[in-house]
Image (tube, rainbow, N blue to C red):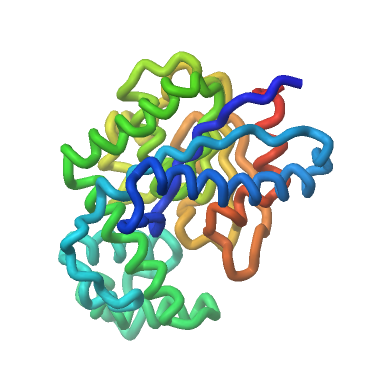
Amino acid sequence: MTRHDVVIVHGVGNWRPEAPPAEAAAALADEWSTGLAAGYANAGLGHVPPPRLHAAYYADLLNDADAQAAQEDDVDALGPGERELLLAWLQAAGLPPEPDDGQALGTMPIRQALDWFARRRGMPSRALARIAVALMPEVYTYLTSPKRRGAARDVIADAVRATDARVVVAHSLGSIVAYEALHAHALPSVELLVTLGSPLGLPDGVFEALDPAPTGGRGSRPPSLARWANIADPGDLVAVPRRLGDRFPVDSHHEEHIAALDFHTMRSYLSCGLTATALVPYLS
């Protein structure tokens, strides 16, 4: 069996300001290789050599080194656009338009909305706030800054061209960047896209802002793809809506309870046997 390379695209929370981009990419690839090896073992494929991972690192493009860091659960530090995106996310994840005594979602203080949602999901409100503070700024920056957006897509394209990869695995925000990069650049080597914990279909926040823009309520298939597989943990609050096939030409959608607490981490998704099973046919 021939060993092939896979380009892996990270999500939010992976900025390493102390490291040059190439060094950060190598460190992430090493870290995730361990997780993918566990996924191969969990799929009964321990006898198969896992592929070599190459991380497409773009987090430095969405973060400013001189920006003042907010506390990890300080939702009040989010800007107006980030708060609007947060409310769209909460509503897509199940927050009703009038969650408390007729108070409309748009007029509810952001922390109150988070607390309400956290209580009904049976999770600590600070844990949900940490997810929001980690997720919203990078997603909002990517979607609203054309220069940074284009540069991030170029990173994915450069990684694919450097490795001639047949497979791209993209997690969280990375699934948005990879989707757009595969549309924006001619990358004929890529045959398989695997999206993990993807918010591509998030209404009123992400879906309508995609490039290329959806038509008729549907996103389009990137050129050259033979297969697109999507994997989502049913408890993953970022992967909303989970069934990308309702809005995109996904070939296979899989749901599995991956982890009780780390339901959205790249490592958890890579350690799932479903991920390994999706990769193997394109790496042999």
